[in-house]
Image 1 (cartoon, rainbow, N blue to C red):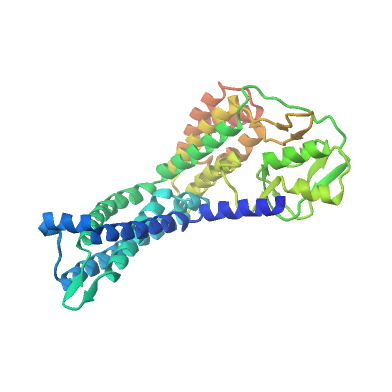
Image 2 (tube, rainbow, N blue to C red; image 1 turned 90 degrees about the vertical axis):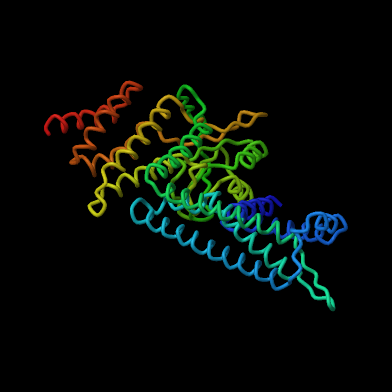
Length: 403
């Protein structure tokens, strides 16, 4: 039963995170709106309204069809043009920054809402188009529905103008870097909740290991599933690798304080999150790596843009400053007992070496970048005492002094 529930949850998450979810939902909403307005159009209240305001009435069916045809053709053109621009933006971002930033652009909710409104307008138009009927010498023309459609179309035109502004801004390097920095910061704020570093030693001898049932990126635990397992089986566990590590199928991923049967191992695996795609929300270190990749790509000979590398470096040091005084909770504890899951966490020094050293190794010959390194690392060194930080700062100062 737990497997079915987790499968349904996974499918639900995949469905709502799909690029088609919001446009489809909005399109369905427009269809319902069209049906409601059409019903009002044919009601006695609608007829009275059109009688009181004669210019709301369209008597010629060819005029109505002409208006609807012009609207649907125009909106289709807007849709094609708008999302041709999106594809150009994605191509530019992938070629000049990093493929990893595409998630930030593809998953942008505003773009999906705009697409949904355009598609919804087209659906609305086709629905109204199909309601124009001929009854002998008279015609059924939903003129009030057409008037509402005209207002929606004017809104679409203004939305298109704003969309052009938005999409040209969203491809700017500093905007993309700020979005990655913001999402990483919020993930860290949720995860790094301790003001002092607490390192709890695992006080048990591992009697068994749990091996990964499939290959994937280890992104932590389903807290509820894992806590239920620990309480039911009266055991504690320790993770072998930190989050963000790619685990091969059959490779040990957890150690357990007691011997487990095969069915118990299967239950334990339900609480482990192995994903094919990394997520900043689950693993903030991925956001750090994205910023490092952007800086390295900017420093590559084909692009040679130290300005973008400096913006990325500033974002990284800002995030490291927060991480220096905020620490992740290293355990998940069961409320009703002494059982825990001990997580392997990257220390500040390890994180610093992973994300800052590659930028220095690649860009230390650039004078602008060297000066920025000296300025930023000098400030960061006032926040905490970190051997890798002092080591790199010494190298930077020697490099700058020799220029």
